[in-house]
Image 1 (cartoon, rainbow, N blue to C red):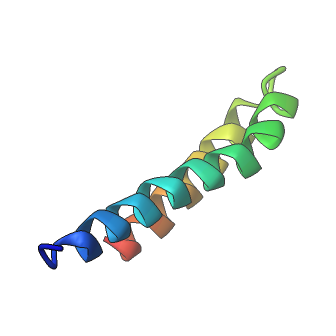
Image 2 (image 1 turned 45 degrees about the vertical axis):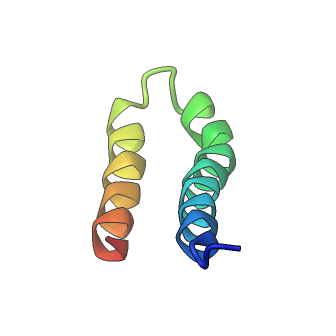
Length: 55
């Protein structure tokens, strides 16, 4: 045991969190893909805003 397990665990949580947000938002982005460019851009902007404040 080297005591370096916590950073690996934190990185695992970060990347899994990003992936889970993508999985949750994917159906909304697919539904709005037909002529809903403004709505898709709003969703992407909201996600980027949240991620900016998390980092």
